[in-house]
Length: 405
Image (cartoon, rainbow, N blue to C red; front, side, top):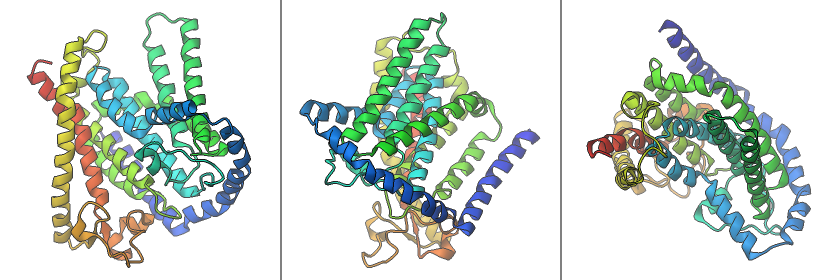
């Protein structure tokens, strides 16, 4: 117990120290000044390669790579992971959720540190078939998040399947590895073909994905054991999630990357908090799972679960919109809202309106002394996704159990 509290305290103190040191040393600006010119040069010199690839433009390829981008996007995983929990593959689901949160944080943080441009359009032809792709195009380029996420999640899925096979078959391992490699190759090539990324972005995403996957395979069992049977898990994760909202670099210009990080940060906290409370009831290794779980039972869980989590997300957002402004006012914290609360929206003439959501390390931590007001949207977004994730692993299984599903 004492050793657990010790390493938890040291970990949190280490993050706080990093936040303070990074702000004092202006680490983001220094890293950016060193690396951004090189990356930008590689993006420019790689433009002819993209144009050459896009000479083979075809409606089928446009549709194929646009669809593939949707399959490996964050909204897809947000919809897919709840189904994985309800299918009974609970360990795989929680591991992939946490890995996704890690990938999202590291990938987006590096993007905003470097603030490297995407390929210039024109001359590059950029295809954004969905609203999600339009938002992705507003982010910086290096690394390619789609490539990074595909490497990590498909690689971990392959590792999980192979490690749980009763009979090891070299031919099946080879086929699985070949499928994953082809999937990653098509994803990376598709990002170049669609004009969303340069070659260096995809190579960077591939390299970072391999490093993150290797490190995750080294620590994932320790992380899982801590979540299901550790001490002070919910309290520790709440503090960790809070600090990670501040331990995020300031981009050169505001982008949606911090919003994505906030959402998945909330998802990770909701999953951890819910599993801590209900592991012995719904998330242990003996729960029925597909293919042993019957199809009607799984369909029933989806019919109960999908409306439930959407309702919880809506209610969490509505509750946060009411509670957070009241709490902030009670504590004397000046707040603004960029999107969620119209009456708190900043004036268009406010020169800091674009900086509120993603202020610097110390400014976000000690906002009352360094900026005019705090963007309450960050807290609202975090709470609504934390509520959604909690309902996936706690409320929906409880309802399903009550209904005999």
